[in-house]
Amino acid sequence: MLTLLKLELEKLFRAKSFYLSFAVLIGFVALMLWGFYTYAARKTGGQAVEQFKYTYESKQYFNGLTFALYSVLFSFTLLLPIFVSMSAGSQIAGEARAGTLRMICTRPISRTSLVLTKFLVTALHAGLLLAFFIGLNLVVGLIFVGWGNLELYPGPLNLVDAPGKIMRDDALLRFGYAALSGTWALLVIAALALLCSVIFDSPVQATIMTIAAYLTLYIVGRVEFFEHLRPYFFTTDMDFWRVVFKPDIPWQSLWHSACVCGAYTIGLLLASVVIFERKDIVT
Amino acid sequence: MWVKLILLLLFCLMIAGAVHFAQPRESDGPTSATRDVNSVRLLTWNIGYAELEDDTRAHNKDLPAVADVILREDPDAVALQELTGKDQLNTLLGLLKAKYRGAVAQQGRTDRFEAVLVKDSGATFTPVAAGARYALAASFRPRSDTPQITLLSAHADAFNAAARRTYTEGLIDWAQTRTRSSEVFIAGDFNFELKAANETNLYTDNVKHDSESYSHILRSFRDLGRNAGDTAINDRRIDYVFGPARPVGRVEVLRNAAVGRMDHWPLFVEVSF
Image 1 (tube, helix red, strand yellow):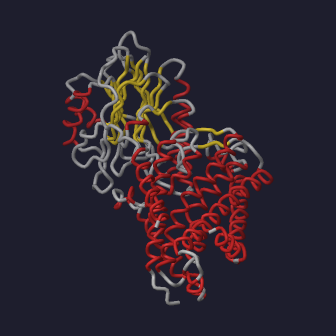
Image 2 (image 1 turned 135 degrees about the vertical axis):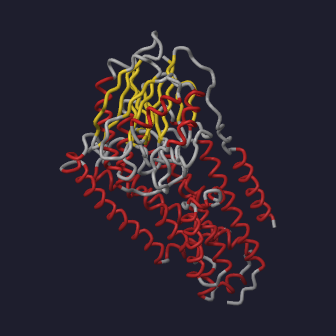
């Protein structure tokens, strides 16, 4: 199993798509920095100050931690799931498309070990992506925007229902929590993409099916017609990762959603194992 | 085989964990039904209709039902929104069997009026200009041993978040000049679109304006009806009672009170001194 893991890690680190995902995230942070800078400049002077007498959007509000929070929250919903889907979707189907799956399966390793190893590698990729993204945002925020406390207001980020504040050191710890909770949430996507990768022989098809299922549930979950179905969508529980940024973390609700996400992940992984064991590999 | 069994066990553990950590359903019932003698009981209600109707202001045929609710709940003061004018107020005061006095706000750019009804016969009414609209304030004493209360009936723009913000700033500026001489409450339909629980919208100027407005109010006042739930159809909590940091008794959205095509429910708040 360890040799298999080593081989799979080698494959991951040699893949161009692995580095592409980090490059795109760097591009996104640069874009966010430009947007944040110009927005902060507009909102802390000139017309904005003349139009309204009172605002929380001051120089103290626009700091590196606020920048990192906005950047992570904006990207998590759509950007990161795409890279995780790509990584997981290509794990089995990619081998099938390359014609190496049959050869791998003739080696003295169980198919279960193969699926689990590929899932572990994908999980590592998801964790690295999120940790890198959060770290990069904090470093960029520190260098280009400056430090301060994390001020939260009801509305824009939908995190709190009353104004609140997290002190700087505590806020940094919360970003650490977010790396863990976010990775755990992304594992649902990874497990779904791995299942698609087992079912379909094309990595593109597996990735697109995963993203389509994710986006469908994400969008449908936000349409009021389907309000009663919302609690049954995995996308609803995946959102739990962000509650670590509430001034008082609702631990009970966090553990509940984390367990639901865990159930989805393990359930999908189990289905992948069962299907792959019975699969007739003809490619 | 053992790997699958471990996965199955983990799956069951996760399900058990999810059940164990599930939040108990919040009770929809009132927080307290007892009446504190040293308290003030306030009710705010937008009695207008939903947007799809030809005339979205209050309808005369609903006034007996509105009066029934007020008489049954027996608040010391009532903030009403979307009345058609003074005639409608007089009809309502008649239905309330002369238990309340009232006034409507000055007409702004809209075709609807805010009103305040107060039990105290010595109450005084003051028009409050805020942005392009008018609110109405009533100053009164519910009982001789309670401090003077000022209740503002407010109705912010339904379609323009920037206008809501300007209006809110004006109201709070006015209210802060009164907080030394009386206990100030601001009640009404603010139309703030703030829902942290179920949505993950990204970032819009409208949401930000509402966020700024709401946060600005909370710098000086408490949102007394925060835990009472939605006050309008489509799961919206847009009717508020803001007031000083005093112990709160019964807080309830009266969900069976709406009649006809009303799209709001009254919010009842009891505050002790």
